[in-house]
Length: 67
Image (cartoon, rainbow, N blue to C red; front, side, top):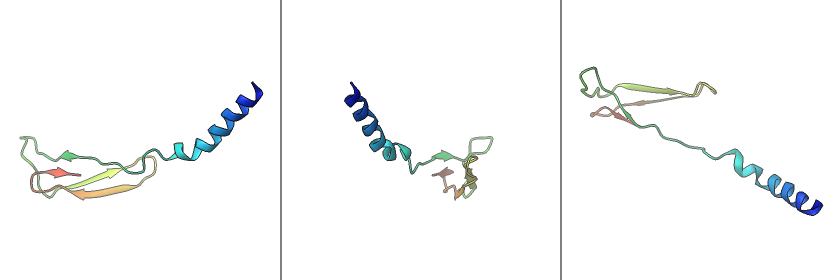
């Protein structure tokens, strides 16, 4: 019993670095449209991570799509 407990803790410690960074990238897709539903081409889109303050800026294409 004591040996299996040690083994469980040992394996947990070895796996810790792999559990810290599950996601290192992501993507946000969307559309920019006016109140009539028409696309707004070239509009500036800013995504802000409120926890870190990091901001990413992109522009919508001719059909209002952004990524």
